[in-house]
Image (cartoon, rainbow, N blue to C red; front, side, top):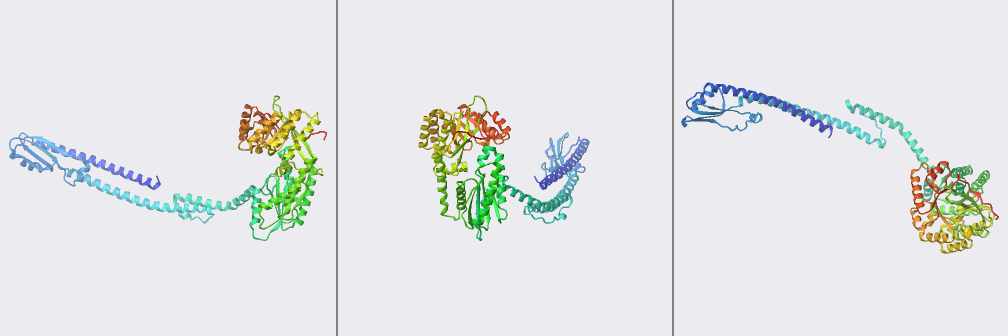
Length: 632
């Protein structure tokens, strides 16, 4: 209930109680006066209690002292002496007697008759009723006056509050007009002062808030590792180029840090971030004195650079500088390769997807040419088809020459009863003997339908290395493509070669990516069955990223599952990851599937995973990959 209605209710109750109190006092007075009148009458009647005669004569005698509302005398023997005056009913309009409700009746027996009277109450009621009427009138007038005064004050109050509310409602519009403090007198003065303070503070802090928002916006669109803008900014930039009507041209360079996955695996995620940060530094140094440029990190290991108002020939200076800086960086780290770059021209109106496809093609060509190489495509159509042949020829050549080396990374068992293995990591080389990025080779082989032949070469070389090197003991994990595993021809070939090499087959664990295996669970289940028949085992790597991971327990039934490294990252602080790993371990143990945690890079991660009862752990903290020595 609002203040106005509450005040009205309180005022009504107060005045009602006052009137009721006055009525009570006057009513008591009336009752006392009535009792006095009754006593006086009774005393008088006692003086004539032996009356004999007519009732009219008795009425005339008593009327000299009393006023009657009703008078009736009934003679016991002579009806002629009977006399009646007035009525027992109250006169119409006698409001006073209805309010005070007093009756002055009396019955008296005489020797010859019976007298019944009701005294007139006018003399008793008139004074009290007049007092009550006057007092009530004054109270009602006072009540109405107070109500009108309160209504007027409330109207003024509402106007002031409405002014304050309208002022506050315009604050989000950044409207900071001066406060009319004269509108807030009395008890509202603190409100006016507060609004004035609020106005001045908001006005003073507006610039600070705007600056902070600009800084937050910049932070949200800036990659913390490289310091470049994020992919969202890149998307906005390239779309702006495609939609602008102004004359605009330049070059787009895509730099692919193809060694990121290898560095993360060989040296850990911290080393991977340091690698990207130093690669970004190389890009910045190469851009010196080349005019306006925009740099973006568009994926985990890919960068995009726009250089405005230069041609491909002028942009080649950037590529030369970049290669020199990359080569210097590679020498300091003793790495085979740091990154590859592809450059294409752009102008206003270019389709973003087509431009990026062309740049990606240029990078792909550069990757076939050796470490830290670059390539540029001069046209936006036609010549980009050449890149397909570059990769086909490169992959076909390394398959024919069997240009592969293996690194090994052990998996540490968490208890002596658990049998695990070492993972073999493949490294590929081109005809010049220069290292090719493993991730790109495998991706291109799948893109151009050459993954089966590549996987056959990997398996053949693995069996050859193990057969020719008796000193290499234990089980070995071999990575093959899920797309190859889903082809019946490859599965039959693999089963046949494993059957011919039973001793070596028993030492092999074939690792396949979970997301690839999920595309065809029936073929995945068939592959696992055939491999088991040949005596080898199967591991599902990067487990836990798909939406149907639990189907592997029921339908595929591998021997090992290797949790994705994201579950190990800071798992000691992540309760969600702990819950997931604990659940996976519990289910896997029930059906004799071993769980291996990957990407373990800190002691806290190792200790937490041990408490979660995983069967094995792999990562930079456990053991670094090392070159597998053999007789090749």
